[in-house]
Image (cartoon, rainbow, N blue to C red):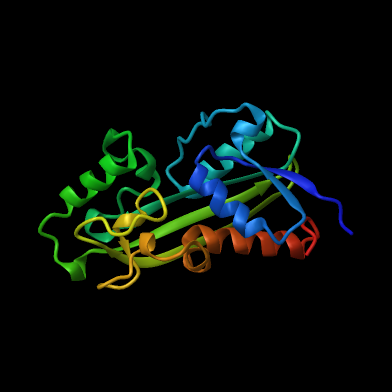
Length: 202
């Protein structure tokens, strides 16, 4: 039997923690969040790419804990907005809540027809144990709804349709979402890479 190891998920977002713990459930890994270490989500995110921000977060928190760190950076890229909000998704429009950012995003897309509302969620996930880096990305293509749909998920999920008529990402159950989501793809790929390298027991 493989001894359990502890990893830090570098997030204070309860939705992300729950989602990623579900992905890691089959592995002998005890997953901790920032609050378990008395840490705040105050890592710098000054990069212009998802990989830069993810590595910045992982490095910042690895300096503060003695366990390996999993970190990610992700965002929504909307073609009609020239790829915005992108790496600025978490504070798009300098707004505080997801509801405000969603309303702001829909306002920017007023009058844009359905066929031009194409978008994608992109995620870059990284693992850093103080010596070795592993990284994997994940993408899910879709469309932006004309109004929020569903009450599942978090962030921009209520705006994101998997097909022009739906369903929306916030309308499917968590198991299905993990199979297709950008974060699910990125972290499943990362875990497979870690298992292949012998860092994570299968």
